[in-house]
Length: 155
Image 1: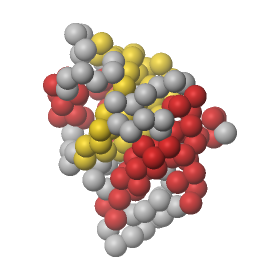
Image 2: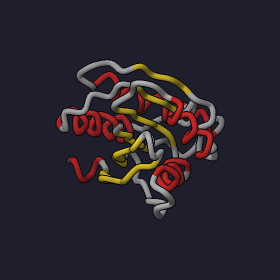
Image 3: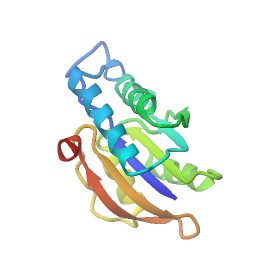
């Protein structure tokens, strides 16, 4: 299984609540850039897991709209900025028939999740819109980080 862990695009600094912060125009562009990168890699996302926070929802919907084929999308309350990476790891291990999984969430959650899924590798820092690509062994329930790419690198 390939797992793509994505941080939401650039968002406004404040809103009525943290959960209601929205993407900026730059954030929408970052999401579109990363959708193009996924398409260029010939990656066909089967399933998307997304935080309920507005900026993550907007990022996921922008990416999904620009993908060549529409994946199933699921909102999970436990993948918020302070969400539980162990619960998420267990959830992934319980999923069936998913070859390409995209998870759209927040810092520091995305950083801790990559560490959790890769046997405690140092937690990488994500720029907004960045995607970490992991090769995940479902039998071993562990993965290897293949790349961490940001919209600036895709250009």
